[in-house]
Length: 471
Ligand SMILES: *Cc1c(COP(=O)(O)O)cnc(C)c1O
Image (cartoon, rainbow, N blue to C red):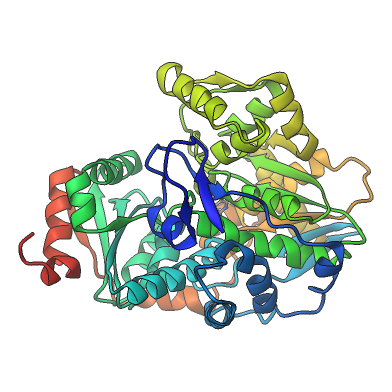
């Protein structure tokens, strides 16, 4: 499979190229040059297979030419062997036709593990084959950093640096990143905000000499391999509820638009999806865009679902590319307009195309709390606040449709005990894994939120530098 940039001015790359590149050189995002198609018969054959088998089948066309099927099968077995539920992503029935898809049985108790575990193994495999090393640099406000630490700790070819804002994430989130006890993992608390962390990551990626010397690589949700791995659970869930013979809908707690775009990928591959609901918290840029056609960020507000406190949804560009019938010139025009004016407006056919598949709604804090409280009252089930946003959005938009509605449960409630207790009056039980992280020995550095300070820090610790003393 070859990959092309949404902005049409970067070279096309094979899978290993996009795996390591992250962002395209023209500022665009990589997408497959065509969508691999699954026939209804092939989808029906997924029924009753293990999660790993389905994962290998769904991902194989995307890695074709770069990773042989036997390697891919072994790799996903290893990745999903670390999950504590035998089904990996089990469905829980809540109502006649409302279901929760539990995506929090991985090492860090949030859905990001499902893709990050695969990404870690794929990157390590490619680098070792090429005899190369890489430095992964990530800014995190919580879940991504923890998932990356668990995916990359102990990997021979990779050094990981995660930057987080000192004192501005929860102790549990920090401990999940700082108790790994692996020499190749470097958690760094910056004396600044999350925006400072992100700004420094951008600055170092734009410093091409530094970027090349340390072979910087990115693992945020613009990395295609993450999207590809997330498409898998849309298949397992839909097939468990009767696809391809029955259509299903999904409600997806959305921030950067990565997870829900994976649902769109599943649809384009042939999965009969009726509707994809974009569930946003008070940071509702996508709900406003679907309503008015105008994409215009507002200042970020803090909510009880912090992993969705995002106003610029990077992966939305991938949908723009599809909605404009893959017109990279049109994507460039819109993104230039965005860079200059801070907003853009979709054309009527583009908006109509999106509304054919997607619906969107904003869920405020009181509605989220109410969704968690009602669920707990009716079925003693505790959901986390991100999942609460998805539940409330599903309730608002479901109508009296008989199509099964699958709400993605993106984090374990024990990761957000305060919000859960506030809504339900009870505290979620901590899984064993969280206990381990909470009681482990912490190890991290605190440095100034300055690009030069981070540059020096990486240069001192990267094993790449040791291998190349002239740097
Ligand atoms: C990252 C995250 C989301 C948002 O996912 P996107 O792919 O950014 O839309 C939702 N819930 C939780 C718990 C997350 O960690």
